[in-house]
Image (cartoon, rainbow, N blue to C red; front, side, top):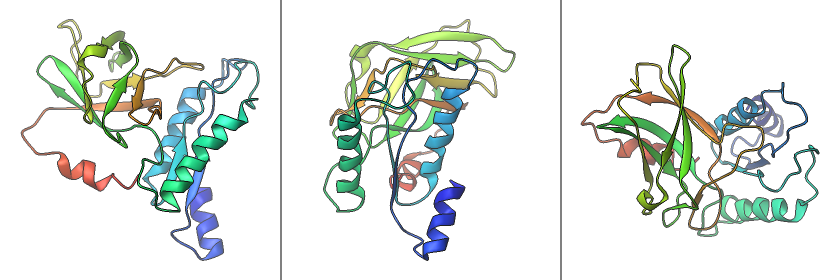
Length: 211
């Protein structure tokens, strides 16, 4: 994030577009917090006029630099067409906005959904309680009917206390199940669960729609 800000300041172009590739799958350094680094990259998208392409699946677990540069380049070109040249399509895959506790589950909302969410299978998530307990839960692929929301059912044994986190694809080499209708995958992420309210959260989707 600081690098983008510094380059924009140096070039005196505060809205200079930046497109970057998220770290790919890689397993040779298990002690390196690869998922955390990917999430830090995701957070750079809070800066205006930026885009990030997910490269998981195009890498080799034993090589930091993917051999399949063609498909990575295609995703970067797609982002440039949208972000820089104004083509009417999503510049990148799904980005999470928030996770809300509602009834017996957690609703996760996304932007950059295009025509709607697409699930290629049951979607696994990890629930992390503040006390250290970790639970693996799944959203059924048949509950993914497009739109910008996915609901993750939660059993009664999971308390969902304040500070609970939910993670998706939080691994060195995760399998991806969430896409938009343009075939662009959701980024791995970690979100803090918030309480359900009657407040309309549409403004949050609008505020982050430029990400």
